[in-house]
Amino acid sequence: MTVRGVLFDIDDTLFDYSTSERVGLLKHLAAEELLELFPSPADAVALWRQIMEEEYTRFLAGELTFAGQQLARARRLLAHVGHLPAGDPSDDTLSVWFARYTTFRKSAWAAFPDAAPALSSLAARYQLGVVSNSTLAHQREKLHAIGLLDHFGDAVLCSEEHGAPKPDPGIFLAGCALLGLPPHQVAYVGDKYDVDACGARDAGLRAYWLDRTGAGADVPGADGITVITSLDELVPLLAA
Image (cartoon, rainbow, N blue to C red):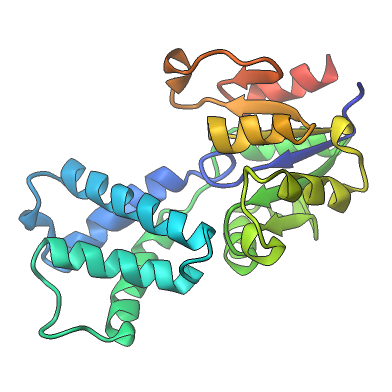
């Protein structure tokens, strides 16, 4: 079947989220004089990522708002190192703390080097869009900051506004509808095997798993999923 459109995940697919998170966190903890309370910088990052995964899962499940998961992450990290303000800190206090972290993280925002060239090449032949487990305002701000938003226009769909996160098939199908194409004519590219690749495949799209980290060696093969290690591989594969 001919592919006429391509949908993308954002974080750790087009946008180097992991690097910005690590750099931002370590700078923030150093500025707050908290970094020395961890056995090592790597331990601090590992704990922050564990907390993020757990609280972000609650956001995706509808248990927390987007801002609420940020407050929960701040509260848990500060509690871990024994630096919660006396008593129960207010949401405003935690929000200000998280905002200081966000400032450092934004200073490290960047697209992967292969993102802009791949999107520019694809734009000549395919309709492009985004399906992301996040909020629309946050992801559009991010895409604008890293210079990629113009490739997608209004074809940016996020789980909070849609009402269900990936891997729910409905959000993939809604992304296809944004492009005005049936699922079998749309490819989906994302970095998470279960959420992105399997979710897109099961919704009837052409699934491409972007395995930048080399995790593929530990993941069983699956029919209907094409593994790539760089977006540079996507253009010739779709053309073929």
